[in-house]
Image (cartoon, rainbow, N blue to C red; front, side):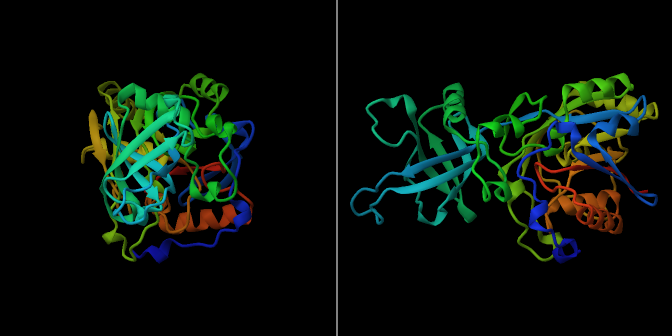
Length: 364
């Protein structure tokens, strides 16, 4: 299929800049292929599931992965001799002291450049130091940074100096602030490593989790660390030519066994977020049995894919021409999702990370 098949017009006013308050007050569009659409709220979720169903959450935790700094002036003969303001979005940890990152302005950086993040003024006090050397450079502004700090010391410095990596469509309209530290994090996040939130999970509150449990719906956790590649545009016309950025994830033996038992007993598996779904589909065999799994996944789900693990998917509304809109079209059907998004736009649903959500059931 062509990328243009997944384009649509979205009014800018529907892009949410703040989440609903309380979280479960957000709207929920229920999509039942072949049956129609239903407008509800997140708080109605327990009534849409039944005892014996399972809800699967991604427990990754977003780190403040956006760093502002300056490239130090180069030594004489090194070309551009001036200090340059830079911005890094950490993308993937490679070693205790090394991160892959997207850098701006990427074209002005060279291997060997020294970057000072955090405190960049008077360095008499080194408490604010967060320095790195650019040790490799790829295409599209992607680089490898070797930090002077390592391990927990580096983690603490990033947490202190970094900013929450809000998606470009929010960051372009307002600056990140302290409220985003809580808003852009699920309440059950516990495994540090993501540079983007699994946003469907942002709608959950302790009260909603308690009501799901009271309804006999079990909850289970997997981990997929979302990379900055999730924000990169698709640059090919033919989807068969697109290659996803790999992301690290794991499904524990306990979670795999529990989900297989639930499926065997007739329960349904509902993934909260495309990250949970992609990870379970990576871990499932052709027979639908979910195996314990850890490693990197670059699975790209397009129409025609045969789903093995997930029966339902709760997910926010995605960008035009994005891999995620392609995924939901594969899950519930291309025409079904075109109609669902047209309905959402016509009735004022809020889009993207801080927006409303949908509960999709899998097409036959």
